[in-house]
Image 1 (cartoon, helix red, strand yellow):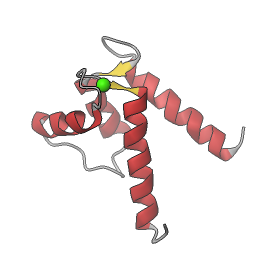
Image 2 (spheres, rainbow, N blue to C red):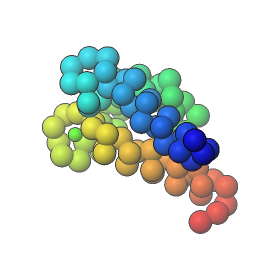
Image 3 (cartoon, rainbow, N blue to C red):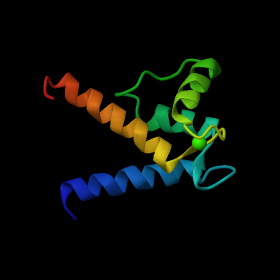
Length: 92
Ligand SMILES: [Ca+2]
């Protein structure tokens, strides 16, 4: 597997590692999203300090407003953070 393919596989596996913890195994609940951000995105995203901050992130990501973050909605977060990381390197 190439480096990029390996990264894509990791993006996928990390999602299911957290989505499978409670409730619907194919979506992230509020708590699962919080755990994922805390454990996997601590260097890229400020860790939400309280429930209100998590709710805010959840609201922004939950495009179809079902109270869960599905894989597509999670990819938007990963895409946005990757773009921010690129901007940080002074490239376009
Ligand atoms: Ca959703």
